[in-house]
Amino acid sequence: MRELIRMLVPYLKPIIGCYYGILHISIMIIGAILLLFDNNIIHLWLLLTIISIDAMSCVILHNCPLTLLERKYLGVGWKGYQNKFLKKLNIDFRCNHEYEATIELLTNIGALTMFKLLFICVVNCFPISFTFHKPTFQPLI
Image (cartoon, rainbow, N blue to C red; front, side, top):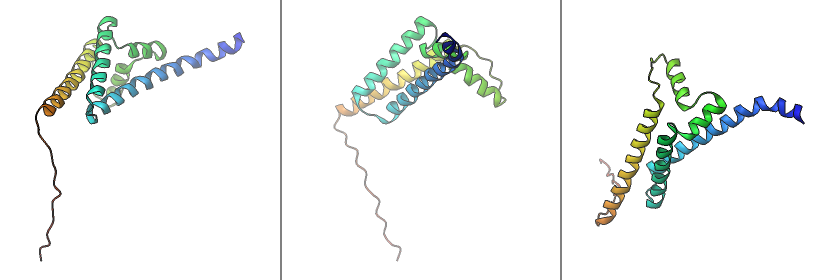
């Protein structure tokens, strides 16, 4: 049993790291879809709460918790992949301030979410109706 575990351990770290990477990207994509296409106030409040909790954990841990887990198991986090990608494109990107970039991203996403929530509340306060009419085409003859 111990020999089997010793054989599997080198393969488990990349698998666990890929799991955290896929989880991280999935959360970002689903959050972006909710922010762009959902008008349900409860869903947007939940998204804002998740963003706020992530921002607080970034302040406490000095990085995103999922990025720390990715770095633990893969040796490189989300920002590392971004830097490698930019270097492959021959873009000289030397900024390695992950903490500031993460806080800036979460601040911008949180502000956009708050703006959308407030905009929906303002639109609901006033009796504004949006109607779209189909254009009718008349023949030239």
